[in-house]
Image 1 (tube, helix red, strand yellow):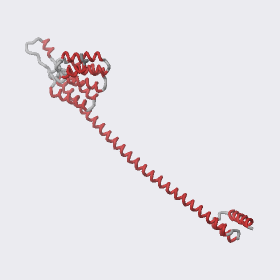
Image 2 (image 1 turned 60 degrees about the horizontal axis):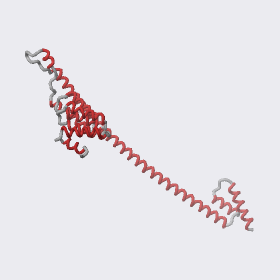
Image 3 (image 1 turned 120 degrees about the horizontal axis):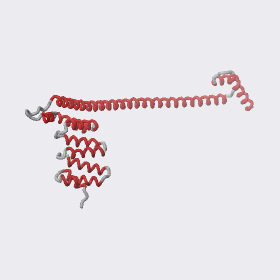
Image 4 (image 1 turned 180 degrees about the vertical axis):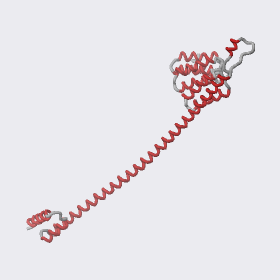
Length: 274
């Protein structure tokens, strides 16, 4: 009798389920009232419902936990993004301010050099050396020319170019030394300006141009105390580009012609010992 009864219980459950949209508990009640289920069937169905509910509750709790973790991660990422964006913005602002300061300093130096050039050209147009009374008119005409530029202006121009060199603005410094040499070619600072001009090329690793400008010092200012230093630097540059024979010649020239200078002491150390 147990098997037919179980079959009758299942058939009753199917009929009740097909009745449409009835909850499981109500179905059980209907089955009990209808006499189609035993107490064991009811207990089994109750246990199954409780197990299903527990699994659903566990799944929902896991989903809530994952959702909270995801929200926390998103919040942290949003905070990190905001902080990173702020740091980058501050760095860009600082770089812009530094660039503006550099541009302003370069502009001031260029304006000062332009002012000195204008002053010098103005003086050359207005200051003329008058001929000595009774002198030949041809000689008088030849004697007409510009007066020596003021020493103060020359020193200011030279110092401005040196300042740019020390700041690393090599192009601006080079332009300043070139302008100085055009405006004050006979000034006592002219050999030093020529030396610094060569150094701007040396700093940029432009060896050919640096050698050319260093060699202009003994050519244009043969009595300057910058000559042995310039020749020694040319020797170093020749070594740098692999011309050892030419380098030895310049070192020997310094030792032979300027034996008591610091450059000669350094050059001797570069020459091979005999």
